[in-house]
Amino acid sequence: MTTDRRLPTVEDVRGRLGEALFLRVAGPDGARHRDRIHHTPGPRWFDGDSPIARVHGDAAMFVGGIRALLLQSLHPAAMRAVSEHSGYRGDMWGRLARTSRFLAVTTFGTAADAQRTVDAVRAIHDRVSGTMPDGTTYAASDPHLLLWVHVAEVDSFLLAHRVYGAEPLDAAGYDTYVAQTASVARRLGVLDPPTTVVELGETLASFRPELRGTPEAREAVGYVLLRPPLPLLARPAYGVLASAAVGLMPRWTRVPLRLPWLPLAERTAVRAMGAAAVGTIRWAMAPRAASA
Image (cartoon, rainbow, N blue to C red; front, side, top):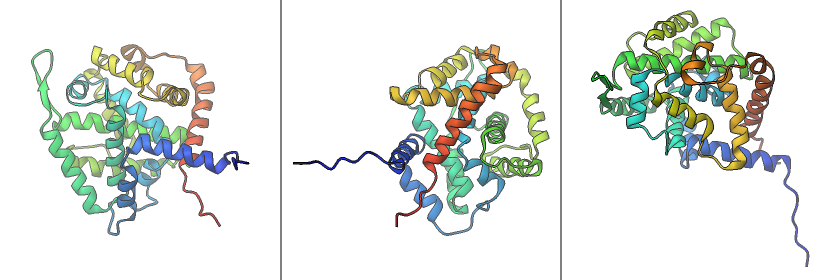
């Protein structure tokens, strides 16, 4: 008796890797949401080839997303809200899936679905509030706090796309990207989001006096970088993405968050490994041609 056990083909490996990555990022019901987002007919907020679609649809978002988490942690009120109301310790991937879905719906979904998603997030923000150690209060619906979260994300996604994107945009394209993300931010409650790359940098700089590395921030960073809830076999690849994200962090963030500062290695070995990892993700998750 013989058994037909063929070796896995490149396409088999690609399919399995793509499915595993998609499951991690989009969650167990990701396929259902993907079909709704991309295949439901109706007007969209953005064209499929617009800068926001090109940035948010690129595998460089894996690096940008990790960098955004690291950068956002520097605001004590934002970090306090995450620590007290989010499951970043026990449900990091669930939180990632929810963030990924919000970006997907508002970027690629129908206008009606995007607005419903924004309304749902605003309702959640209205319920998140608390008290800082010094007795001051915070609220997730605070426009100033929303602005910080927004600019930290946009700066991270933009920089990751510039460095690791398959087709980086020109200066005008990135300005359009910032303006398009601003239109979503306004719907979320941000009052005056930046609309150009220059304004984005100025807004980020304006937050510097408020930022510091709190114990909660360092705990979150340690969890994100060193203790991801992943199988052992997947951790080396994740470590490359995390290293690439750290390599894109501003120098002034390294001491407060206790991040390494290795400029030569970050510009050479880390960047090369990051590009390889992002390229592999892009290859694994790209749509495959139907079999003949």
